[in-house]
Length: 151
Image (tube, rainbow, N blue to C red; front, side, top):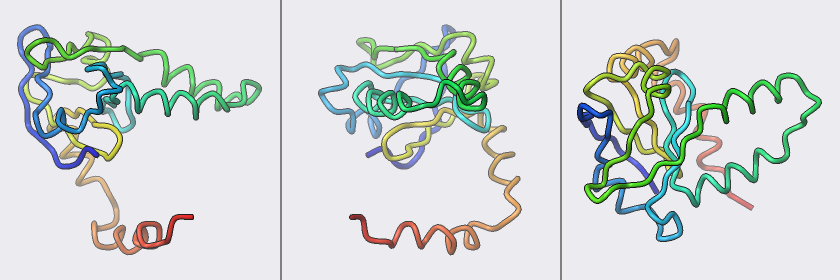
């Protein structure tokens, strides 16, 4: 389970060293492979390969005759890149994804349970301050989801 965050630097070739705090939660089934794609709110999503397979299975049920679903699936999958950790535990972020997320030298890697997000720090700060409700107000609403028993 990925949680927490790390501030990292990209090297001159747009490679990111995946922090140990995240690498240690990658399952052997991922085989050091990850899937990198566009996220929401101008960040990137990074899934271990085994978790990406679960996402793909969910996407298989999309309705190809629904225009919005077709658009989403095209946009979401158009920038998918399978990446592999090299011997120094780095992944290469392709130019189109660097451009999409407006990444520069410094990035924030954020753990989100089954995946990670990669953010430009300025965009992340703007996102955090753009919410019209406070963390506490939102926490009150989502507490119902968190505390409800799973069947």
